[in-house]
Amino acid sequence: MKISMLIEEMTSEEFSASLQQTDKVIIPVGSVEAHGPHLPLATDLYTIYELCKLAIKEVKALLAPPIYYGLCRSTHGLPGTISIRGETLKQLLLDILCELHHFGLKKFIILSGHAGGTHLCYLVDACEEFVRNHPETKAFVANICDLLKEAFSELNIPSSDSHAGEWETSLILYLKPHLVKEGGFEDYPKFPRHWVVANKKEYWSSGIWGRPNLASAKKGEILAQRFILALKQALAGF
Figure 1 (cartoon, rainbow, N blue to C red):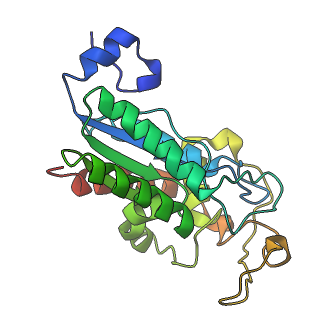
Figure 2: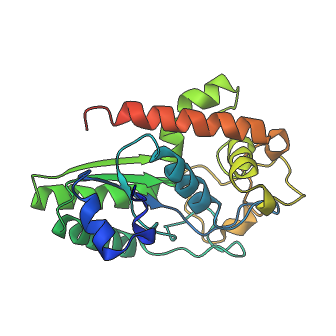
């Protein structure tokens, strides 16, 4: 009987058997944060986790239970945003890496649905420390936008569309359409350049950074296909 590659669905015995099939594991990382009036708070988690579920049909790797929470700077203070400290995120990922490595896994693929720069730095920092302490291992870290850049160009989605806009709304319309609500509109943050501000809501009250009104399930399907292709190409030989 074929074993599901989703770790959370396995029995202990099935997990042991799966280690004979691959030494790779994907760890999805999301966030819980405001995504406008039209998208769920866990958008970053849903997009990356559902895409990874599709990807493991073509990429021979285990899929670990996701990390729901991330470090959210720009949406901090907006209703529903639950941010964790960077050190918390780093230590959580390190603990997970160590536990998976204990069972013999050696190649770790960290994929984040949340593309915040500071958030990603802590993920990279965790992996840097881990591979330094375990030189027989390898780590790959990427965010969803890294793997979809070419698809954005193909669909004429501008770089200014980055959060709860056209591409993210399209993915949720494709992956979890029942969670998309009415009310999305084009908007962009107005943070003062170079200044660190405490009241983020004063400069970005909507949580939208782009054009959700141009989203469609068809675009979401194309983005999903391109994500899988880009991931396979990135992991070739890994």
